[in-house]
Image (spheres, one colour):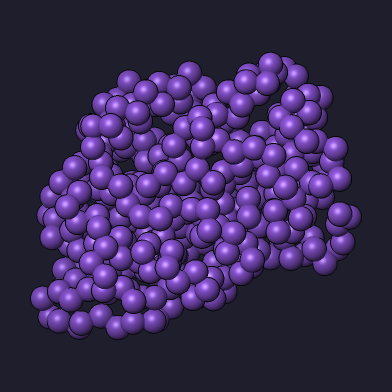
Amino acid sequence: MSLLRTAAARLTLALTSIGLLVLTACAAPGAQEGSGADEETTIRVGVPRTFGFLSVLWARDYQMDGYRFEYSFFPNYTDLLSALASGNVDVAEGGDVGLIQTYINTNGGVRAFAVTEPAPGAQSVLVKPDSGIESVADLAGKRVVGSTAANYYPAFVTLLEQEGLSLEDIEFVDSNPNDAIQAYVQGHVDAFISTDPATAFAQEQTDSEILAGFGDIFDNYYPYFASNQTLEDKPEAIQALTTAIADNIDWAVNNPEEYVELLAPELGFSEEALELSIGRGATGLQPIDDEFLDESQEWLQTYGEYDIVTDPDIDLREVFTTDFNDYAVPSGTAG
């Protein structure tokens, strides 16, 4: 479809905070009140705009008796990781690459205490219906926009190889998420690779089709991680937060209409985009067990081959803790 100026303006309004905008973290909108107890243990929770489910807790101002979750919203994901590394927040969530590189950058100063189930439908290659591209093989000679620093990049290369192609057969445009969406919607490239909700937004804006996904190649998951000091000093609060995350994922998955109505105005995405995202995202937390760690360790070597992380030889058993597995199940109290 052709792009109108109004669509471009809408894009700019909705996406300026993806990967570019540096803003002061702002307070959460009120939805539920905390217990107000004098002996509350406080956890400072950093909320990203474009990942996972902490935004649900933030939008609901979700609290648990005996604890105070202080939410700060970060439109720019890099700012959130910096805030965690500098001690300005205690907890964050993001992609596996963000966790691993933050662990490296802080000399092991953070660890993951929970992780979502895989969300294979959350990442995909989009093409427009009038592009003439009907298969991955048709990408030969085309311009594809994405990020070489993203966890999907090695999987995309594998996808090409499965069709007898290589990166030399296409023109890969390396870009941040904001510019990538702009380039795709405005017709400067032929295909777009990203992660929900950015992918869902681009899909909605252009009536695009999913050409391919990466679920058969690798598991895309979202870890929740905290500073070592927080994990050591406030383990009961992290236990409570882990259960709160599990409860709110369960609530979001089972109440998609309420989820969409709640989050769309807060995150600046359309209800249609968030509806697509929740429908193909993770449905809960998974245990951090040997199978998960072994598979992740193997994929970490692949990240190293593509220079996505600076130290692919770290032991992920030092990055992830299993201490909170028992709390990664819904209690049924988030409704």
